[in-house]
Length: 442
Image (cartoon, rainbow, N blue to C red; front, side, top):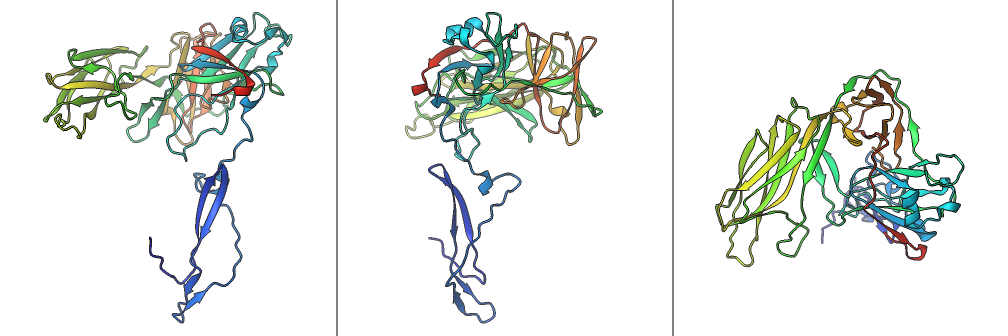
């Protein structure tokens, strides 16, 4: 037990916590002080307490920042339909899809169609980490082509869906790193037409009239390869992929269309190995750059020792083409055995429309007071751009077409993310399920 020291002034300690979903503030103090003039001890015999919540800059440790919970889930009432997606992009739900899902479209007003979901990514391990209290309604784009408030066979719904895996920018090494969702192979969204009121819709966002401080003609792109294939000890969260044993080398292709050959690309590899000291050597290359590194050895005879070691390595290189092949080989012979954990790449690409959909963002444009003009080349009048920085409140970006370049201007004090699409190529859900309101669940 910590020894309490009686001081000249009574000091109040405050702890803010959540118990049974309700916020509590816990106060404690020693009701004795030492009179600094007389040196004698004085006992507190009565007091009044006034608590004033304080909001700090990070919204932490304050009563205002405590979570408050909805009285019930939105899933509690009505009929719900669950759909799953596995990639970032614009998804289309047409008449036949919604009919097959179970909606009685002949009597449905398109304004009643609503989509809920919290986007991709794994929930944080820490209880204090941010998570939504309930499913959030997503802004969607409903096309009632006949404008008759009836969902006809030619009508459809567009929404932005996210993969279950996410990327996060690291300000220290100035790279994007992937966060694999190890608990789900999909991101889930929920459709209903039974709630009161009209659904949330995607609204337009005007281009800024402020003169831009910089032009965005290239952007950051990234990819990763990670297979959750084997859990070596049938315990823990770590799952590994390809095995380096009889087969000692693997080649993994990563396409980056319109890659910028004058900007450095970045690759990172993480592997595991089991071998006695001095360990296991690996060699890997990206075409015009290569490296060799060692994974520390372990005592393979110790039944209670460390079973394997893990190590990672990075390469920075100028790409020679938009097709990057990563070759990784185990050079230490058997009985050394290894496993590939993951490979991830960062590269710069020209902001030129490729394919039916293209997600883009640019860290070079971010800075206090910066205003950026985004210039998407190789476009046409049918191209649309949605800002998807806030996945719950997607915005249709207003732009102008100058020749074959689509342009818009926005402040870029923080990182913004967009998706451009030609209106002809859409993604479709992986699987769908109808849920009864009495047992709707995520």
